[in-house]
Image (cartoon, rainbow, N blue to C red):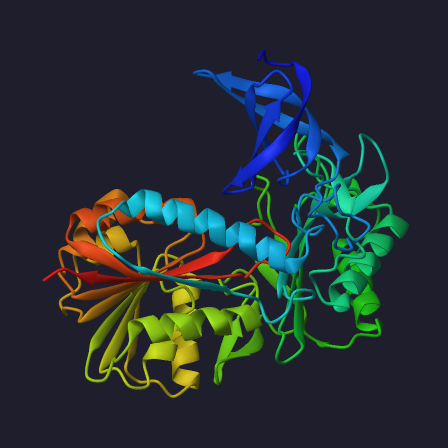
Length: 462
């Protein structure tokens, strides 16, 4: 196949993360993202390297026989829920098959292990507690849009005012914000020209408490609209407060961000109303969450995930536990009540502060949280762990950090992964160091998407 060529084919299988294998009528194999087994699709070839071709989806010519579920009106345009047209049980089968295949390829025939059935999310709809919406337009020089990036596009934005995976309060806030700034004729930040004011809208809503935190992320280019920034933001805050909401606003914030990267960055945050954090509850513990601190986006699913993690960790009485890549310290605090001590290490300073405050609030005096890169901090730890829990970011563990972690020589580790490909890669050096996989269980934290979490129990061979 040649770059730029347009062709059709049938999707045979899907590899993680949602890379469809398409066989053309001429018998050529092409990888096309955002496809489902059984579909017939048309695509444009955008990459050919070492005999392997990758294509960009143009159209679903024929649906898969599996696609029998109802979808929201944004499906197909929005870059979010690829699997929404599949019944939930079909989604689970695809994810479980993908993860199992990667695990078995990584560990080979080195050991017999138990692969448990995938655990489903307690909620399939309205499960997310956080969304980062982008300001933009649906087409060049079109009206203001606020929502998710259009599938396959870096620039175009789809106004997702009827999104099914968030609580209706999210959609009310989105619509209110979009309409307000349209009325005020305030423009969005244009990435190529580096001009404009509106960048992102961050909304977080606790499932258990119903508290809502809203943060408007803008540039400092206040000369791009009429009137003062203070009056503009005051009007927006008052408009939000007048909304008929099921939940309640814990805080309404404004964050400045002049970086060139298309990402939410905190270069100074002001409180327009309330406070800079909200509270969520998890497995009987209470957590304070700020705008940018890490917390699982599916609160009810997180309870399933952490219950499985706690089960795989096993007995902690009298033991020292290391929770590496600890985030806001959720796992550490779940394990702390019967452990002798839990030490958490996390690179994001704000998350470490939140973890310390949360532990104090939950009456857990045996938790210590250290700020820094795991790669460096493990060299400074004087205590020796009895067991280790690993919950790294999507890219997995730095190769040099793996070696240092393995040098502790603990008899048992639990690896919690949000990206199976990173997990499979990391399992190879872990296994080579004398550890074997005992148990694996997938937990679906992200219904209607191609992602899921995986918990792995590892034991050192005697």
